[in-house]
Length: 89
Image (cartoon, rainbow, N blue to C red; front, side, top):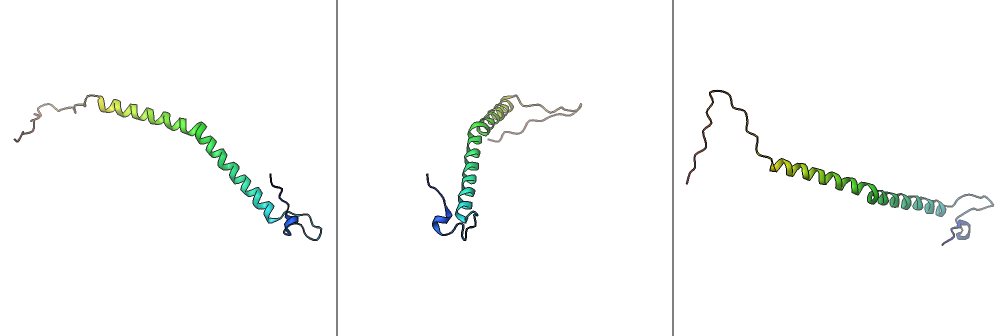
């Protein structure tokens, strides 16, 4: 572990004033950014990935059922004759 002390580097508290150096601010900000990245990665692997997989499986099943169902015949009005297409050889 590295101890961050700006006063040792000549950038921290000067003239007896106790304040935070830029180096200390940067280390804190980078630590928060890394913590957020790890939390997002953990959330993806623990929650989001399983939810997406379930939804994809459900949508694939619905699409397969739709494709394997017999085609629906449109209703035909009385007196209408449907002529099959010509087969050209």
